[in-house]
Amino acid sequence: MEEYDFLLKLKAGDETAYRQLILVHNNRVINTCFKFLLNKEEAEDLAQEVFVEVYQSISSFRGQSKLATWIYRIAVTKCLDEIKKRNRKKRITALGKILHLDDFTNWIAGGAKPDRLLEEKEKMKDVMEVLNRLPENQRVAFTLSKIEGYTNTEIAEIMNTTTIAVESLVYRAKKRTGDELKQILKNNG
Amino acid sequence: MNQAELNKKADQLLSEFETLGNIEASTEWNDALMAKITNTPRNTSSQKGNGKYMMLVLCFILTNLGFTFTYIHKNNSSSDVRQAQLALISQELLITPNAKNN
Image 1: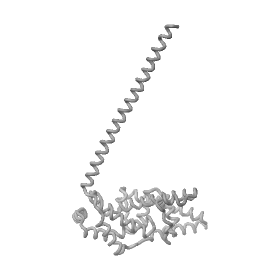
Image 2: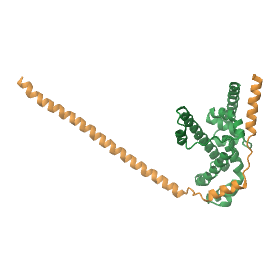
Image 3: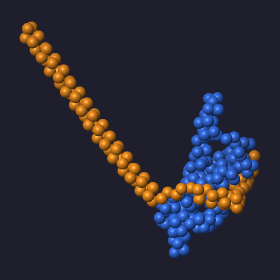
Image 4: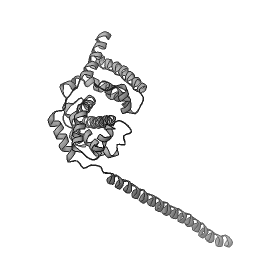
């Protein structure tokens, strides 16, 4: 009942309700974005986009899931979109290097900025590479399971699947990540 | 690197990945977001209705275009058949007198 009243306030555009919503979910949304992107600035920017989208689309939220689940689902979708965008940029930039058209492809890729890798992101480069190779559902389940506070039940709700399926996805992702990471480390000597 | 070392390094990287994060939103971040939100137009139900209406109009236009295209195509192909028939008839008309002469 309380959530229903709160939702009505949000739908009415109540500023205090939004401030409350942000205070409750901000850290978790930022940390979710961070775990997917491994870049603090980008995670903070994307988290803002998540809340803006929540604000814009709250009228279409029918309450079929919990409000929190809906918000985290938006966050995950935005992170996956951002990763796809990054991969696309990487492919275009790589193609440009092969064809010696760096400036042109940089422009096509949307002015790809120079790498702003944080120290931790550099350290996690191999992990990111392995995670990039995972099927999307394994990647989501595995990444969310590594964020403090997400239970398998919650992950299942976000992914619109069962808890057993999440357990299986996390298990397979963990095994594959471990195996591929060892292979990369072996190749790197 | 032997297998044991590889296992250890991989496990270490994964546990480092696990502990990464724990970022806390700053007051500035919250304020910037609130400012952004208050300046953002919301998707109202009337806008949603407009969208539906636009889709309906678009479907109507596309259906009509489809009908027009089919009609033109049919006309063209039937006129092609007619042309072929006329060519055949004229050919026959020309051949018949020649055949009689022969």
